[in-house]
Image (cartoon, rainbow, N blue to C red):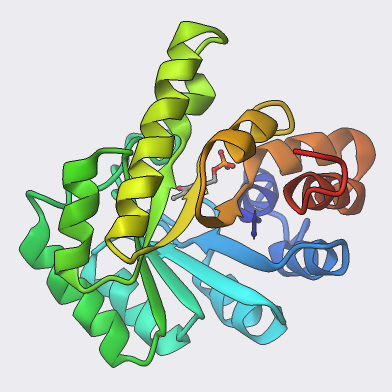
Amino acid sequence: MINIDHVATLRNARREAFPDPVEAARLCEASGADGIVFHLREDRRHIQDHDVARLKQAVRGKLDFELSTNDEMVSICCATRPDLATLVPERREEITTEGGLDVVRLQIILSNTVDRLQQAGIDEVALFVDPDPDQIRAVRDTGASAIELHTGDFANASAGEDQLYEIHRLARAADVAHECGLTIHAGHGLDFNNYGLFARSVSHVREVSIGFAIVARSVFVGLGAAVTEMAQLVKGRHGS
Ligand code: PXP
């Protein structure tokens, strides 16, 4: 799954109508992406409301709508009815999503939000969580059917012991989620270099969500080629 937020970041930097994230989504799908991810942030720093409706129309594969538990975002998501809604924490001052949801502490609000999304007819609701067994077990109690494992600490770890520590945390967390009967997605900071170790080490992962590394690579090789390279890596054609 390709996250196209940063195509909108570039567009908004110049207050232009291009590059269009919807056109990017079409190209990603034509180049091998199984689905498209976007995050409608409360501050609308990248994806805008008009993009959401157009993405819903244009995307043929799986559409993943990332959102916080903010009432307005939940209403827009319910009206959009994506294939997957992924709940993430959101702080205005952060550069990107920092860490997973505290599902243990926010159990009630998250359960209510999951329920609202499911009642709207959204089949799959995921919670973005750190690779912490207690948090993962708490996901089950919210009624969500899936988790997205936060891979950011792994991606930021320096090669060697730190990275091995983080990959073992992810592997153990995925096992726990699997035992809980949850569908497992993963993302944040995955790139052309670290994906191989991730894929070899962490089992049961159904989907990965990758954005920045692909948009960054597209500056040099074009979006279609960057997506195809990553799709081949993920689908194992070039080994992972
Ligand atoms: N998953 C979640 C929940 C995210 O918030 C992000 C960043 O928007 C991603 C995955 C993708 O991360 P990256 O852009 O680092 O690939």
